[in-house]
Image (cartoon, rainbow, N blue to C red; front, side, top):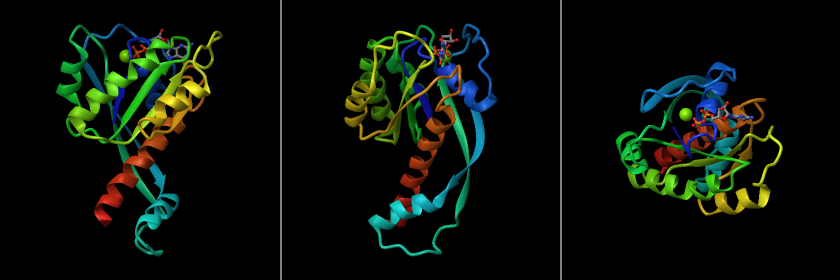
Amino acid sequence: MCVVGDPGVGKTSLVRRYVLGEFPAVRRPTKEMEVSTRGGFVDLREIGLAIGKRRRHSDGILPSTARVELMIWDLLGGTLPRKTVVRRHFQGAQGIIAVCDVTRSETLDHLDEWIEDGYDTAGVVPTQFVANKTDLEGAVLGQPDLARAAWSYDSPYLFASAKTGENVEASFQLLAERILLEILSRRLE
Ligand SMILES: Nc1nc2c(ncn2[C@@H]2O[C@H](COP(=O)(O)OP(=O)(O)O)[C@@H](O)[C@H]2O)c(=O)[nH]1
Ligand SMILES: [Mg+2]
């Protein structure tokens, strides 16, 4: 999965919170891209139900949990144009975490461009909207804004904080589940 969004919205902090369980000060990036991995489990019973709706499926096809390895690609920024960086790294991405900062409304508007570029390279893949920095005062983005933006991509959204850890686990987990659902339903077609 790839993490996208404007500089400073907290992409690297979310990944570090999820992978390392901490909120360290993030040093200035020197690289263009950083890849981290974390293993986990996805409960397949709910996914099984979702697949079952598409194809009459009975118990026994799926085990109850699946072990997954998430490979998370964090775009570190730098000076190259967005399109160049996305094209260079998004080939084969199976999901997108689209991050905005609740205190800066333009960061949500810009996600359209990030996601469109991502879809151009990786195809239409499951996308998770994350509105980060809920711990800060002065949020300007609320539920209706996220609902409207995420709706255009048929995507769920969560309000999160890399600082407190709120909904960080859930954001990655939810996307992992939807990616797996996508893969499994394609296999069953
Ligand atoms: N208060 C608060 N600050 C955050 C949060 N997430 C990131 N930051 C801060 O926002 C700045 C940019 O974060 P970073 O992860 O580098 O953003 P990136 O450019 O999108 O990777 C840093 O100073 C972080 O400490 C959060 O949830 N709450
Ligand atoms: Mg970063």
